[in-house]
Structure formats: structure tokens, C-alpha cells
Length: 145
Image 1 (cartoon, one colour):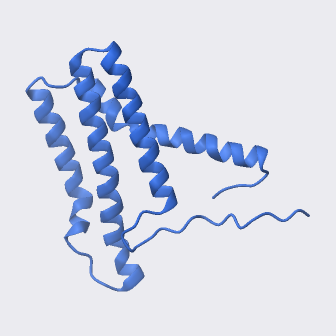
Image 2 (cartoon, helix red, strand yellow):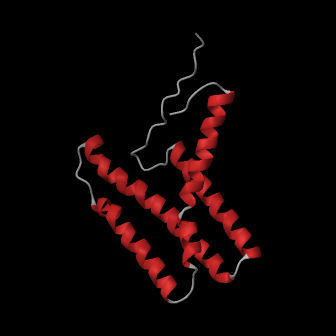
Image 3 (cartoon, one colour):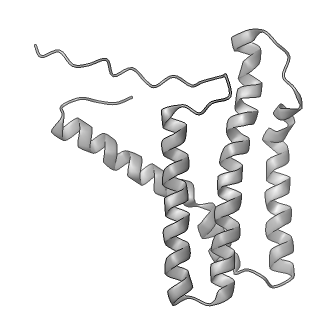
């Protein structure tokens, strides 16, 4: 039987630095937003471009807030410390995002569909990660968890 390398999942860091998976997520989301912005600058009206920009920025901020609030929540289990105010950010982030989208749409600065498309940049990462795992499973005969 052929032995493979250790394919254990990459550990999540509680120290404040991003793990390799988190860096891959952020990098892929950033590239997806940048490509969408460049395409919309050339092909779409300005409200679509500003909607993609707002949605993309909010998507990246949401990802950052999710990491911080999740770490604060799980620090209770890891270190036995009480969670700080960051744990409230888990719910507060939805109010901030919805208020920003509402205000931008109310003042007719963004296209609502484009804003939701920008907020969906995480979906691009899902497809990229699925392709990455498929590549490693087929060509390198190993599974990545």
C-alpha cells in the first residue's frame, strides 16, 4: 500500500495570524473582486461598478469580522478565557453590512444586484477550492481535508 504524506487539515490559529486556508480564502476573494471590478469598468454602467466595489469590500470585511468573532467565541474553549466584545461582532456585522447596502441603494449610488454579486465573492473561493481539491485528488492521488 502506498503511503501518502500527512494530509491532516491545516490548523486554525488562535494567536491572531491567519492560517494558510484563511490566507487562501482572502487572496481568492480579493482577486475575484478585482477581476469583477476591472470587467465592470470596461463593460458596465458606473452604478454596477460601485455596487461591485461596495459588495466586494463588505465581503472582505465580513470575512475578517467572521474570523475575529469566531476566534473570540472559541477562545473560551481553547484558553478558558471569557469572550470579549468581539463576540458581539458576530451578529453586529450583519447590521453594519445591511445598513451600508441600504444607504448606498437609498441614495442611488449602487446597483443592488451588483452589490449582492460583490457580496458573493466567497462563492468564487468555493469553486476555486473545489478545483484545487479535485486536482490533488486526481493527479496526486491524495485527499486534502
